[in-house]
Image (tube, rainbow, N blue to C red; front, top):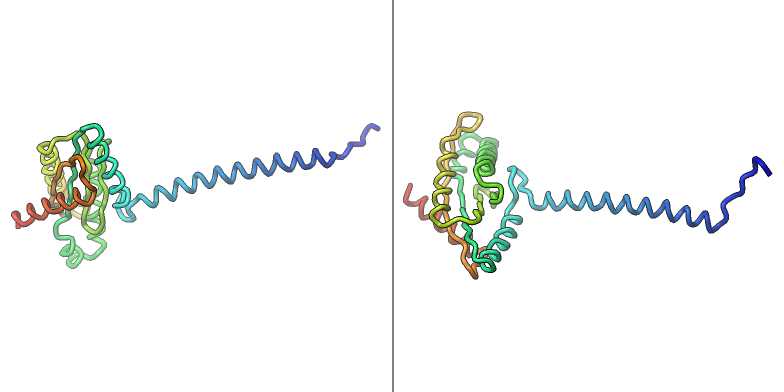
Length: 194
């Protein structure tokens, strides 16, 4: 019987097919996991700047408020408005306005601690969460960020400025309430400057 191979019996064929199908399904599941992670990252990313978007920021704000309540830690929220974006868009074009937003985003990202979070909230507004800071330290950081942005020209030489409101996060805070306080603080400062 040399040279003659016996065909696989039906049970061996089914078993072999199941092993192949199982391997293919595992690869499909692995690829789907990668794709889901990519989509989740996109869902939390701002479409223009290198920062997270409002959706992610609000989720992290709620987590931070929960930590403040549970552990008694300190945290602050900065609400940042790019001054004069409409004028930049009207005079220099929307491309220049986009570059100004990207410029501010990059400076925010570069000048906060690794554990803090900067995000674009929409339009010309940004938010920064500062962990383990007093109100005084948060106000100093707000002033420092405003100074860095005002002092750093864009690639085209144009300079921009920002107005920054500050609020500390407190026990039983709500994300929307904290954002409203910081936004109100920013507008009070802006009115006093103008």
